[in-house]
Image 1 (cartoon, rainbow, N blue to C red):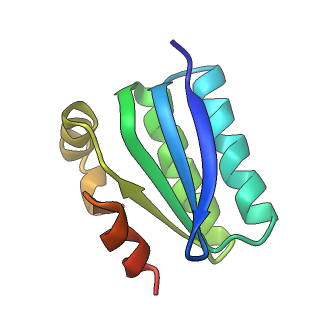
Image 2: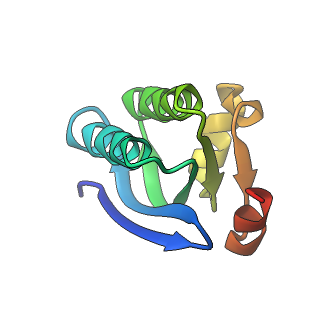
Image 3: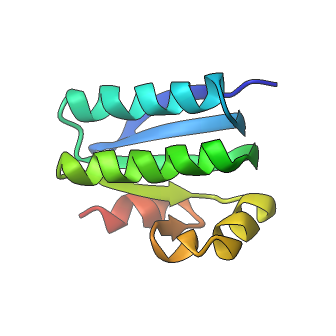
Length: 114
């Protein structure tokens, strides 16, 4: 199953609802393009909803870090929402859990941008 991205806006925050797998190839390219598209349009508040992402490989992890870096370079904030147990564990093991702002519920995540 490839990754799908649904984009929406909540209180001025661009929310990307991701589902599927973030892996080498199409999934990571889709994510990269979606983030660059948002920052290119001037979005400064980006929230990635990973609640339906069931797998991330090393390339996908690299893409998350790249998206975070790209956002920072554009003076934008990128935060993560609703990590699955598998993704949470992966971020813990790789020590990336300390890099990202991570939230369990959307209301708290949206409020954190203010």
